[in-house]
Image (cartoon, rainbow, N blue to C red; front, top):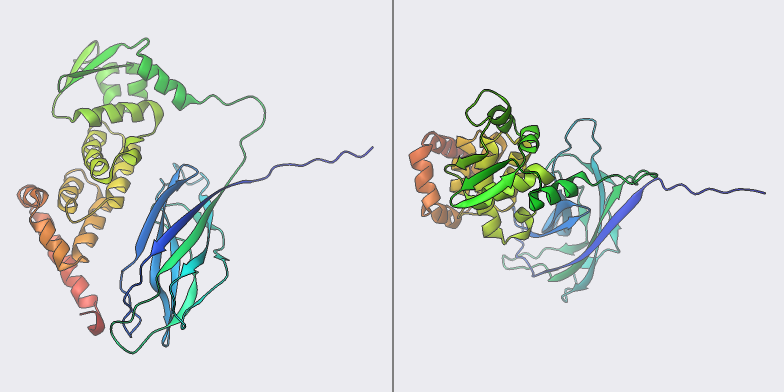
Length: 358
């Protein structure tokens, strides 16, 4: 009697979305600059951003609108850790009347391994149109259906693996066996010294070395936002900060700013990186100056470079909004040296522009 076996080698997780895009003005040169429409989602625990470009590729008097997939997840913890592999597919499901535009059948990219935040996929072209020799030509309005497919290795068979983060989260919520209480701006939080010390070198020094907090059962925390301390505790126990994704954009940005300060204070490098990434995702003219000040004060070189890039490459309108914020006033007072870097970056950006872009 023959025995056949079937072995699961790899699983896939797919998420299908729809994006409606109004027509964009496309100059006769075919250069749409940095204009694009974005849509964000979470697939298999990682954040992703889809960018629609009205003229992703231009040849002659023809243009191709298209999509690109941007990775918003976290980098692997080590060089040996696997990357996140994903495929982007998409097609146009509706299109405004335009005799010169032809939509392609559904296309998909080759599998791409994403290892770093802001890694992007190869371009995915959706169709081809012809530019018109006058300035007010607009590309057609489209409805795009796109699918993000993430590949993952199957979980090992056999005994169930304990969900450590869930169990530690329940321990934090129950306060069972807590041996230290923190007072932060009138609120108290119970915790466990050994868990805190295992995650933070600062707590390790405070509770298990020759410091005044070694035998303390009640610790008062000065100069820290209550919501940020609570979120930091949750991260220490669970390795996650759901508030950064669940709150509205402005509230999530404010929390990320306060949480970055807390992460730096307690040596939580992974949390600090998560906050940097969240601040880059939510960056706008109203928050970029305060974020730049934080980046300078807390040695966040990647975040700092993204802030300078945003300011130097932005419009005059965005610059005016930034100059009117309290964050800019704080930046001038706390980190005046950054202004020289901004001027250099803006000058370099201006010199790199072509005559058609000026």
